[in-house]
Image (tube, rainbow, N blue to C red):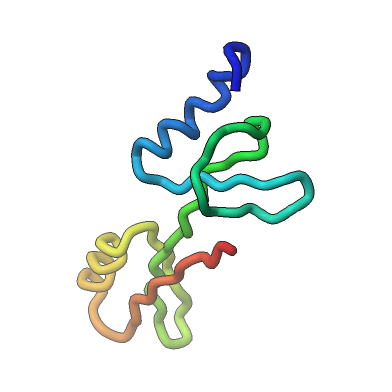
Length: 95
């Protein structure tokens, strides 16, 4: 890191302060986690580890489904429209 590219590292440093995981990779390799981040690589060789996305789905037998971004929205919808459905949480798998 130097004076001309320090601004490129700021989001990464802020993520560390917030307790998020910063990953790194050597050219052509997979993203790695572990050890101290010393910012000796170019900034594009670091990233904030992505959080898995979650959705909630209310499903009805033979009648389709409705997708929600929060559990509370899905539960409110299920209360409003009564029985005969299932609220299911789906979580993205990130490796």
